[in-house]
Structure formats: structure tokens, C-alpha cells
Length: 142
Image (cartoon, rainbow, N blue to C red; front, side, top):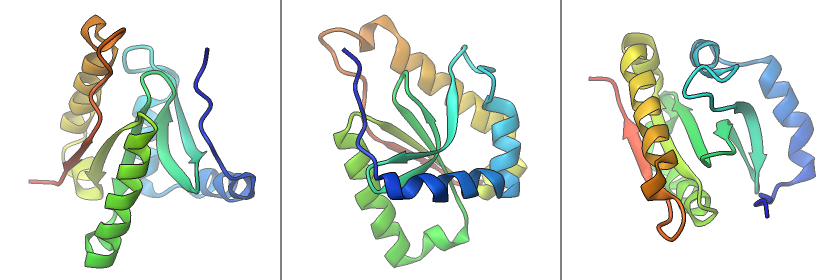
């Protein structure tokens, strides 16, 4: 049986609008993960889940990728992101976060991190009785 994620129908038009107006960093990453370019995994852009819209989401292996601009580093926004990540984790969704500078300055490293995470989440050891790891990896540029 397939997991059906909760979502708010009111977010659907907003998600469509976001797909049409992606940031430069979202466009760059999307060009590298779309059309099953990493381990044959299909990603979706601006996926509504619950009351949130995820930047990128792969249904299998329940992986969310979030790109964070400078506004994400305020105390208030960090708290919102933390609560959002806890909610997504409660749905079994693993969250990877990268700041925009990581996309611009170390795209190869970001793609490698995504590939390694997918490998871990889809490994036979992660299936069956042992649930996949849940958590948040936040990568800032170095």
C-alpha cells in the first residue's frame, strides 16, 4: 500500500506559481536532478505536503531537498525551518538542506551529497524491518 501524504488543496495554485518562478539556484539544481538523473530517482518541484511546499521531493525514497536563501538564517526563520523539518520527519521524510552559496560554489559536492543520501535511503539495509534514517542534513557553503 502506498503512503499518501497530507496536503492542503489551497496550496496547489501557489505551488504552480512557484514552479513558474523558480530562483536561479532552484533552476540550477533542477537541471541536475530532473528526469531521473541521479540513481533513476524522480523528483518533483514545489510539492505541497501538509501546509508546506517542498522545493524538491522524491516520493521514493521520501527525500526532501530544501534550498535556503539568506532569510533562512534569522532566528525566527531557523525556528520555522526546524518545526517544518520535525513535521516532515514525522511523515518519514528525510530532509536535506543546502544554502544557495553551496549550489553556486560547490554544485558537484551538493550532487554527491544527494547521491550518497539516496544510496543510503534505498539500500537493502534501510528497507523492511529497519526504517530509513530520518533527519536533517544542513550544508552551508565553506
